[in-house]
Image 1 (cartoon, rainbow, N blue to C red):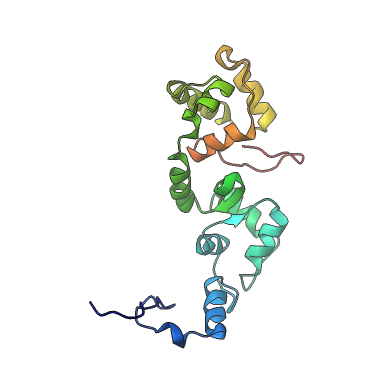
Image 2 (cartoon, rainbow, N blue to C red; image 1 turned 90 degrees about the horizontal axis):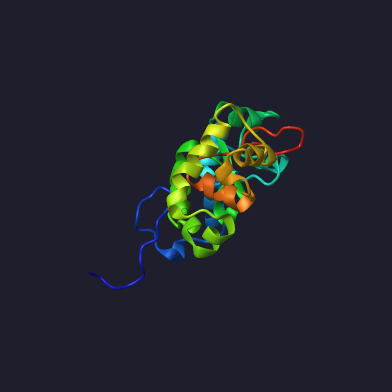
Length: 197
């Protein structure tokens, strides 16, 4: 094998460009193109979300703006419609923050996140009084309670506490995240300013 500088992967996906041939303007143009900013794309909301991998969802207004800037003809409410149609989901993902992603990508990202099995840590078992063997029944109870439609965190906690086994359960956002990572819940539409699942 020849020694020397390693080849650089170019925007067309081929090997061979020497790093010396990449200047600041070419790197910036490549980055803007990959981010659908120059040229602005003609793809759907879910196409933008898929291209970016995920879009931070702490502010739906900021998320809609970030997606709209990458589309030739954005309309107010496009993101909400894509969410309502199931073309994108909103869930806890990276660093425990909320993100929009496509259902397909969400399945991959959340499976990786769930692989940590944080709920098996002794601190989790003690705090929530849930042993690893308790999780299948707990997850089923959550899915059963959400089957009739979206609930707020407080409503879901009340529904779970109606069961003797979970009477003292505190349904924290940390616990909701573990349920999201396993695919048991995702965010639903907001109701009166409160998140639903």
